[in-house]
Image (cartoon, rainbow, N blue to C red; front, top):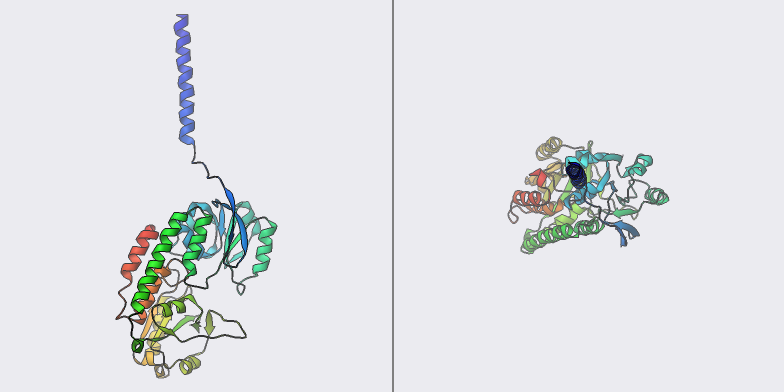
Length: 354
């Protein structure tokens, strides 16, 4: 009997130990990938050393957030800007991250430090905030910063590629880069077939808070107009500085761009579609506006350039569709409807929107 009792106790002990082991296995988490240091050059030409794959990033640009989400790296983001809440291309998962600032600025560095980031991603825009102070502050805390620039259309896939390298998502980045370049090649093929006599002169106007802002020739949207085969008319420089938006009154717009074949009116984050539609109606019925060829002939088109889910005109992965949107607006007889491209893009890269 004594031996039987000892055997029974042994079996019970083994059962407890086994149960404990099973429990431990069930509660284990996927191990974090080992990090290694690499040095990359960011879009401001700075050499930056980063531990990769990045595990805890603070991202202060919504366009960069859209890229990181496309890379399936949302779980590697810990801090976001306030305006991310209004970006329809960002998932609830990203929008629920900790807000650390707005308009490319950090509101509370203590909040940033509490998140223990191993990287900050921001835009190099000296006209919007003190970039040098921001970089010095980040460096004092030992946080590397990658700067992106929203200057060029072709930089969109390059930015995705850089972030893919930093977040350990090279495969996803390559898939988007190939897709984007395919769209550009298709658009170029169509543009090459447009006869010289059919080329359109284009001007883009973005009404904001009662003022008219012209999209300047260095903006990514103007670049897209040229890509689809149009001639963009606005190219203004002031004391060596070329802004992407130029405020201009009605009379000067009319006097300067009477020969425009197409006028594109743009929405914005603060200008809803309805307000832009009111401006279009005013232009078409106003004798002064009708001095412009495009207005007189009814070639005034409204396109969305806000942060809504049907808007594809901003420096972000969305421009893979945006070039088709602009192509159809400028040359409706040469370019197909872009809705099919939008559906394909969303299903492939932002499936939660489908």
